[in-house]
Length: 194
Image (cartoon, rainbow, N blue to C red; front, side, top):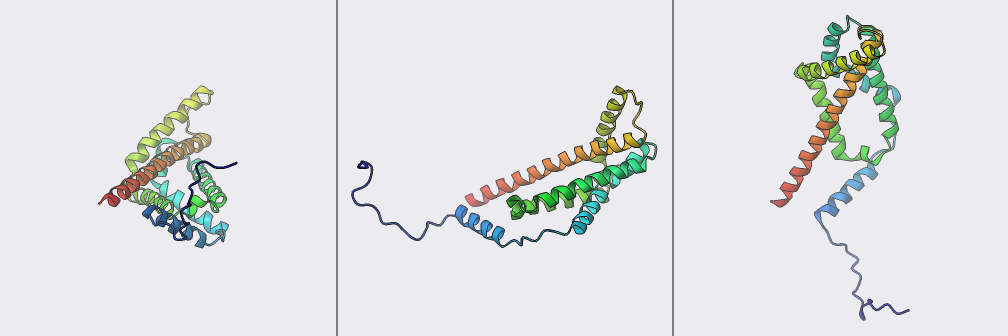
C-alpha cells in the first residue's frame, strides 16, 4: 500500500539533536542518577540516623506529653521507637527508587527534617507540637471513652496518643515539603523568564 502522506523527497535525518534547557537538565539529572552508587546503607547506620531524628523531633512533645499522660514515659518512648522503626523500614525499602536519587527531592527532604529538628531542639516549634498534641489527646480520649476504657493516662493511652501526634506532625511535615517543592517550581519558572 502506498502512503499518501509520505513526502516525495524525505528530509535528511539530523544526527545532532536539538538542545533545549529542559532536555539538558533532564539528561544531567539522568546522568547523576546513573552515577549514584548502588550500595545499600547499613542497617545500624540507618537505624541510628532515624532514632536521632525521631528523638530530637519528639523532644518538646515528650516533655509536654509527660504532663498530659501522668508521666507515662514508657508509652511515649515506645511510640517514638515505633516511628523510628517505621522510617528505617521505609528508608530500606525505597533506597533503590529513582525518586530517592533525584537531587531536588533529596534536598527538600534534608530541608524538611533539618527544619523539624531545629524547631524541636530550639523549642520554636512548641506551639505546633502543643496544637498537634491537643488534637492527639482529644482523639485518644474520644477513642478510649468510646470503648469504655476511661481516660488516656495509662501506657496504652500514651502510646496511642504518641502515634496520633506523630502521624499529625508527619502530615504537617509532608505539607511543608510540598510547599517547598512548589516554591522551587515557581522560582525555576520565573527565573527562566528573565
